[in-house]
Length: 123
Image (cartoon, rainbow, N blue to C red; front, side, top):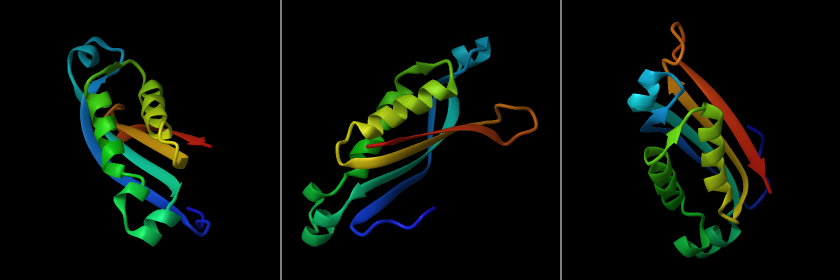
């Protein structure tokens, strides 16, 4: 990953494991499966660093809770759609200048550990 500009912070949420309905086959439609989510979020943290105050920081816990609720409470045919909806949730926070979401679907292919989709957004 490239170097950050002064004042910018990179938040990484690693290996958030959730269960949801994901896929198009009958078995996938009927049974929840694991998905593994990784987030990278950039935001200007100058005020948070200076003031040591949560009100001036981007609250990654709030973002993660919104993602958990959305993913576990919905159904998705495509990994691309799930990934985009998570990215949309991240980008809804105005402080976010860049967001990147990778969603892995473990054991989606017979001889592969997982299949993943990555999408990114910038403001």
